[in-house]
Figure 1 (cartoon, rainbow, N blue to C red):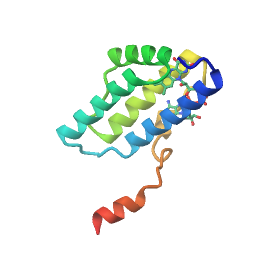
Figure 2: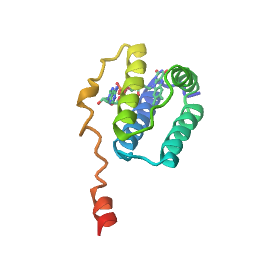
Figure 3: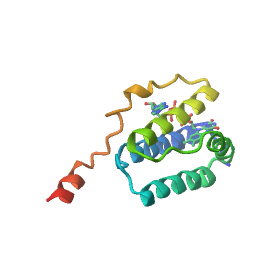
Figure 4: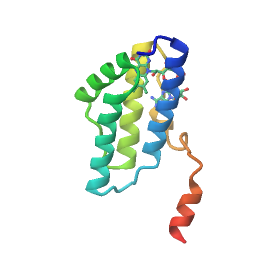
Length: 117
Ligand code: FAD
């Protein structure tokens, strides 16, 4: 367990960034295999998250609100919603999920160009 609040917050910011950016890059129309992969990834992420107290709490959230992985927009909305549950618990401001659209850009546009050409 990470005892230091600063490190815990730094880890959290990095982890949320990866999570939301993954959703922003997830296909609009995923295959069954892609949907299953994201679901598995999220359950494993919750199980292996290095802050034990956080992992325990987040696993409880997943039980109550199973990951939505049928499209990019549903995955992004789900991640925003569960992050807000953590925000709420910590007394942090609630993020407006309507504004999630272009907020998470990985700078990976070049990948898409390569894939097309
Ligand atoms: P963060 O919450 O880290 O958010 C980073 C940035 O994301 C924000 O500045 C904002 O721009 C954006 N953002 C905020 N809300 C949303 C949203 N809903 N959707 C999309 N983007 C958003 N800490 C604990 O102390 N106890 C816990 O139990 C705990 N559980 C956690 C569980 C998980 C799975 C993760 C990833 C982190 C957890 N954390 C926990 C860490 C905590 O959520 C924060 O990351 C940490 O407190 C730093 O907060 P922050 O204010 O810098 O912003």
